[in-house]
Length: 519
Image (spheres, helix red, strand yellow):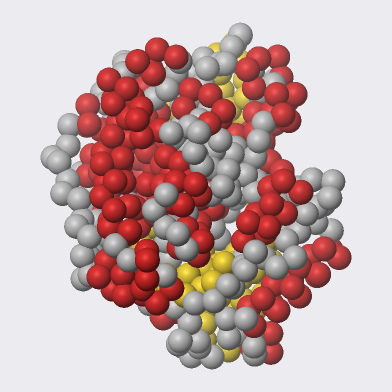
């Protein structure tokens, strides 16, 4: 019997995780990647001895990836060494004060007391509630949603009281903390989904819980190194990875995909896994009439995440007092969010994030130098934010001015290397629809069965992984999407999938002050 063939479009985190599991199960896997390196937005920018993560800069809740590795006979602790950060990051408030966020809750209470004495003890209440909430939601986040019948599963009914569809994440945090700075400190993680916490469903309160309970991790060599090692493992298991070979066309027999065509070859296939940006890949690869639920017209009407303005700076010297991660919250944070999501204009006083990884990992810059990664949330592409050269220059100047406010007053004079990615470049160079770097928004109307299904509902033999399908954006759930997809795809091909679930239970890392290797 011939091996069943699967083509994976895109070597991003979800595509690589799927390739590993499919190859291990015995499929003949070919990964077709448009770029010259693996990883997609989880790749590495390397120039003049500086190394920058392109997109994600840390690992949260690595249990999922650890289980994927375990299911194919690998140990993530050996394959991809990581360091648990403590402090996890600094949250600096334009309204005054800061928190050096740590899993040590006694230390957190000491810091909270300086900002808002009446909120001391509330973090523990939040943690206790979300510990139960995550336990209730895990079966939902790990299962497919193909239709309304899936809502009748006992796991979903048990989680019902925790959904609170009438509450946003921001209002959920307001039920714990009276100081608005603390509300933001434990809800800004909605930006991992590209959304305002005041428009994001309350169920995502589990995001900041995961950080404090299970840790924020730095993979040595950066997150892009994780993609490189995953690609190597996929090839060791028999998958073939073709770089600089974008898919130009899919061949169809009715609604069933039968081949993927590049400029180099045509690859016959029994199934295809799309890891490319959902809206972009649909419009480029699938004729409009074959996807009635996700036509071009319907895609145009969907809600999309914000975008990001990125600066990657190679710096002479080091900033030893600048933490590994710093999140700067503008004084008028809600106004900042309103400009991005509702008004679709560039924020006047933007919030921003800075990574200074050489304080943890000296391999990411030449000796005596630093590589700074700066991310500023901005609107996705629209008529009011087209991102021409003038906008780029103006926003670069504004961003450098904002960086002065956290003590980087001499930054521009020390720049040796500089790369900028704007929303227009996310669209043009990374094939991200509207430059919306976090994909479809995660409002209640675009989640669970209302999100594109892992076994794509409009077509036969087409499966999805990545931020555009269930469960959504962010590295942990993108890896989970690969498991959900493989659980359905492998039986459809007559291949075993029991190895995905029949694992020795992993012990969760406990919330402690000391370093834990990888979770």
